[in-house]
Image (tube, rainbow, N blue to C red; front, side, top):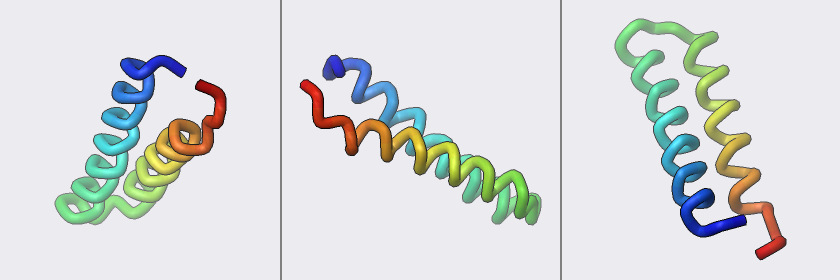
Amino acid sequence: MHKSTRILLIAIGTLSILAGLIAYLKRNDVSGAISAFVIGSSVLGVVFMDKRE
């Protein structure tokens, strides 16, 4: 995986987790917060579990 792709995926995963946190804190939207957290965690998991370089 290219370095620029890793950086982009880390940014997307982090922003998704933050969006889930904001959705929970601002609107008390539990389902939106859980789905954003799962998506963000999955993206970050793909980045950090990828052993091919």
